[in-house]
Amino acid sequence: MARVEMTMPKMGESIMEGTVLKWLKQVGDAIEQDESVLEVATDKVDTEVPAIYAGVLTEILVQEGQVVAVGAPIAVMETDVAAGAAAPAPAPAVSAIAPSSNGNAVPYLPEATAPATAPLAGAEHQPGRFLSPLVLSIAREEGVSMSDLEYLPGTGKENRVTKKDILDYVAAGKPSFTAAAAAPAATSAGPTSVPAASTTEIQVPKSLSPQAPATATKPAPSVSGGQELIEMDRMRKMIAQRMVDSVRISPHVTSFVEADVTDLVNWRNKHKDAYKKREGENLTFTPIFVQAVARAIQDFPMINVSIDGDYIIKKRDINIGIAVALPSGNLIVPVIHNADQLNLNGLTKKVNDLANRARINKLTPADLEGGTYTLSNVGSFGNVMGTPIIMQPQVAIMAVGAIKKKPAVIETPQGDLIGIRHFMFLSHSYDHRVVDGSLGGMFVRKVADYLEQFDPNTAI
Image (cartoon, rainbow, N blue to C red; front, side):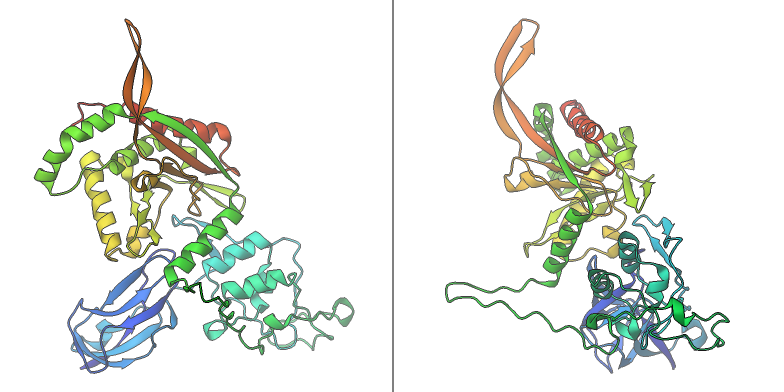
């Protein structure tokens, strides 16, 4: 039998590492092909990792709770598959390019005037080492040069620079990593040395010293007898961080529109029972909202963009995320890819499928990637409106409120009448860096127009 390594799979275009949550198999267990071996958490979703080959698990290389880079070995199996066929392909080299959410890449551009730097005592020069997209993104935003990144001590596995490392460095004022004394004579690393007269000794903060111990975990706050202390779970911590980051990154503006959706409500009431009997699924308002948003994006494509530094990335695909509340109280946003290419029946099935799998933790990383615009149905909780926070790196998000009956003036050829109509509010939050009030307001108005003009003869 051949011994083959099981490696951490790549579970999405922007996912570079995963955390081992739980081993579902133990050493000595027989494993069938495609049988789940372990559970892995990424910054997008928790998922099970299946075995590529059938065999016996002979060694576990990574313990539960450890963070593992994509492509790194996590276990060893004995299998009947030929060793040559089972050998994993080498991981591609990673360049200093930060990919955007849709796969486009914008180069990291350090300041042209950034001076060449020499290492501080104890700071190892590590050119070409792996730098995660998150670290590179923060470096671009904070103006950290690539030369400083090459010397920045990392506290991650194999001295990798973590998010905390670069944020600590920025908080410390971005000190230059210059030599404390005259540079030694030229070595094989390069013919040029830095003259003593041009160098300045700078004290590196303790948090950046490679010998410094890891920062201690913040102690839990004390509470009185009448209070309960609840630690955030991993997903809630992630949501909290992303919301803080989004508000910090994007100047939010929100526009509101009220729409008369009486024809839409009457149409759904007419068809929902027959649809449930025929398809075995509920006919909700959400796919109709998604369809209206997709049509409005076609009319206003500059809503379907993201920002990367000084660049605006315009997306061809219309991928609409739908916010789903989980039984745990957390929130997740699966994505309907190419929503503009689906009819109403297709959107209904897609919405139901994603929502159902989200609630039982069966989403895949692909279900959560590539979103270009997000819809949140706060009306499902009885809320009439909301001011949603943008999902980075998108530039806009819409909340749809509860549908309420209201008295309204109805214009007829015989004169104005008072009647009962169904109304709802649409709230559109957008990034004022690239979406001005005119575009943001016209977009939400167009979505409302599509809902108000819904054809009551629509077939499904």
